[in-house]
Image 1 (cartoon, rainbow, N blue to C red):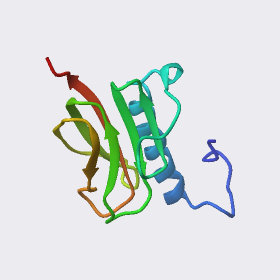
Image 2: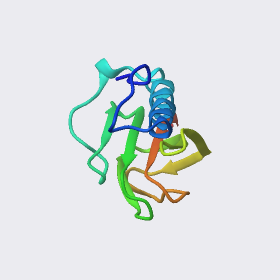
Image 3: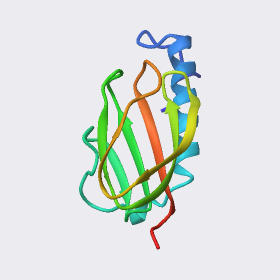
Length: 123
C-alpha cells in the first residue's frame, strides 16, 4: 500500500500524502473497535457500517450534503465525526435516542466517517 518509495505515473506526491493521512486516521478509529465482534447486517442507510452488538457503530458516508439514518437501540451515544479527505477529526458530541432510526447530517462538505459509541443504557 505504500508506493512513496517508488515514482509512479498514476500518483502524485500530494495524493500519496493524502492517502497516508487517511490511512493514519483509519488506524486511529480501528484501534478503538474489535472487528471480531462485528455483527451481521447493516443498520445504516449509507450501506457502509460496522456495528457492534448495540454498543458502537462506525459509518462511512460517501456523499456530502445528504442526511442518513442509523438504526440504534435506546440509550445515549457519544459521537465523533472524521473528515477522511483532510485526515482530521471533527465535531464531537452526544445523541440520545429512544430506539429506531436516528437521522444524521454530515457537518462539513465532504465524505465523512461517524463513530458512535454507546455511553449509557436506559434504566
